[in-house]
Length: 545
Ligand code: SPV
Ligand code: MG
Image (cartoon, rainbow, N blue to C red; front, side, top):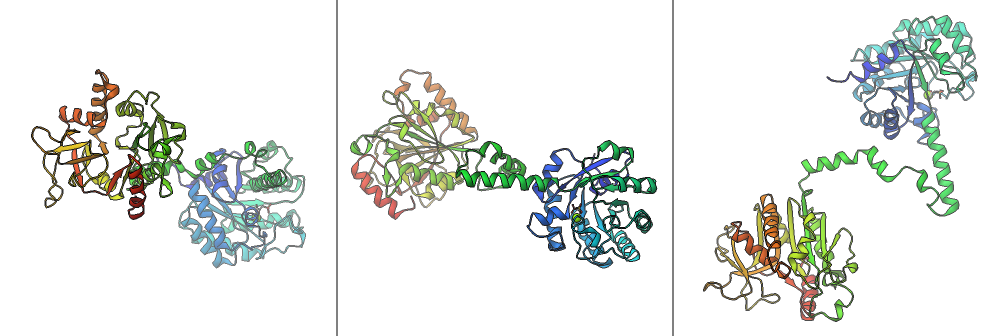
């Protein structure tokens, strides 16, 4: 069942036979806090709205600035808002426009007071304040009621007779005229520290229509007294802005004086609490549905457990992934590429000097047996990081961005990247030779080629290799289970500790899950020796790697 409209809910608060309570708010955040505290309505206080902008409660804030803030308050909450509309910001015509604009923003009602524009706060020299002519004020009420398109929108007429130094008769005369003009409720205000004049008014009023009060000055009156006098609505009018001011002053002073955050950390809201109030969680969920660039179900696993022979000096106290190439580590280069693809769950499996693996945005898993084991043991250390869509790469790989972009664009359960450039021209690792269902035929763009075998042998059943597997694969959808099942199979067999990723690829093929091949021609390199490292600098300079 749909919740009743905010307007109907405010009307119910005014007309219920119990005393109801609403609390001041002055922006979206405070409005939300009022709702979370359990209140059934919000007082959008003119004093608080102006104070939060450090301007005076003398209509220095323009009415459109007020309405703009109400839009945030209304969007942030589901309970009705009663706006303190001062004098209606002008004559009957301005009042009509105000009501229409408030309805558009789902504000449930407005309270206007019988003073002159620009008004002054009731607690600043109230007796010097001039009251609006009764007939003119009644015209504003009528114009507002005629302008509303929702029958339940409420107009509360505020009687300032006591504030301006008039007596009970004038207060009653005005209240009655406003009631007859169509006001849904009368707000009777007082600046006394005791509720006497309010209670006198209440008795004389005798429930002609709902009464609203603002006990800021007579705050010590027991709430039970308001109930006994059948007050319909009590407005706690300015207590969140005051709480705000006191907390901010305290915090600012403490931080200034101590030149440290230590004394305030436990006394201020946490940053996650800010995120919660902003609804950050909902956005993360929505991103999963709507945002194309994010890949919430994707992860990357980087194998980087070995020391890397041939780079002795450079890997004395760090693994290969942490060697800088043209000012950035190999790992940083890889991580930046994954992040550019929306892959944010990145795990590096370390072993040799794994404590030196230190880059923003990566998790580190450790293969403690790195010295006596090979790649599949390392991969097993990161099985929790295998997501619905996982890229697995070697930690010493430099490659151009388009290679990963294409890998992520293809729709295949298992995909491997194979470099088809002639072996005798190729540098770097020449072990992982790939034998495929067809050679790279660039005339046949997007030909579907599958992997048959990865081997270090230069001949396989009388065939020449079709290229080299570069140390990059992707498993997604059903490919995830296929990969993990084959890994499990191998783990149960003898000699597992000595197996590498090509053994897993070959097992996948044997199990009937032939990875599709993405052919490339160059544009990558791996780093195995000082020579490679020198070339890597050039490669990084001349490519987007
Ligand atoms: C306000 O909250 O802005 C009010 C109530 O109008 S009072 O400040 O008591 O006038
Ligand atoms: Mg006010």
